[in-house]
Picture (cartoon, helix red, strand yellow):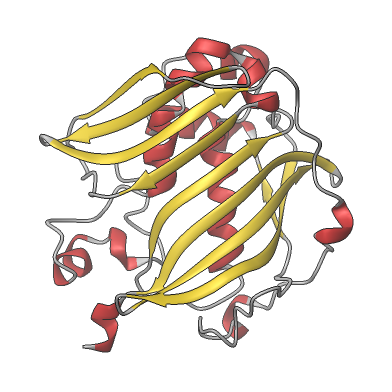
Length: 260
C-alpha cells in the first residue's frame, strides 16, 4: 500500500513516477523496510527494538496494490543471531537486507555530536544541493509526535500483524526510519527523490505518545552515474535525550532525469 500518494515527494505519484520510467507511484522505501522488520521482531521480539541492527537496500520498486513477499534465512554471525531478508514482488527482487541481534547492546553516540538546531521555515527551505547539504553540516532537528491515532493507522497501512506494538504501546520501526525522511525533506526543498537504503542501530524502543526527534548530520554528498546522493547520519531521540536509534540514511536527492 502506497502511504505517500499525497506526499510532497512526487516520485510516489503515478504520473510523475511514469516519467521516471516506473509503472506507477513507488511504495516508500521506509514502508518496504517496515515489511522487512516483521521477521526480526517476530523472531526476537522487543529485544530487537532495543539493541538490534538492520540494513536495507532498495533495488526495484514495490507498487501500490501488488503483493510483496518477505523471506528470511539464517545467516552466520560472530556476535549474536542474524538473518538475511529479501522482499520480492511481481517475480522480482525489490529489496535486500539483514537484521542481527547482538549479544551485548551497543553504546549510543554522544549527544554532543548531534547538537540541536532550528530547521528553516518550510517556505524558506533552500533547494537541495551540495551547498545546502555540506558534508559535516548540522541540519535542523525535526520533532514528530507518535500519537496513538498515527501509530495504529501505520500498523494498518503496512499490514503489520504482530500484536507486540499494540500490546506494549510501541512505535513500529518503519516510523522510526521515517524520521530519516523527515530530516531531509524538512530541511531542504526537493523535487522527486528516491530513498535507496539505510543502516539502523537500535538503542531503545520508541513508545506511543512520545515525541520523537531527529537530529541529523550530513555524512556524505556525492555524484554517481549522474545522480546526486546524500547520506544523513540521524540520531533519533525520545523524551528529548533518550537515544532510540542511529540511522545512516541514503537518498538520491537529485535524479539524473531532472538534468535531461
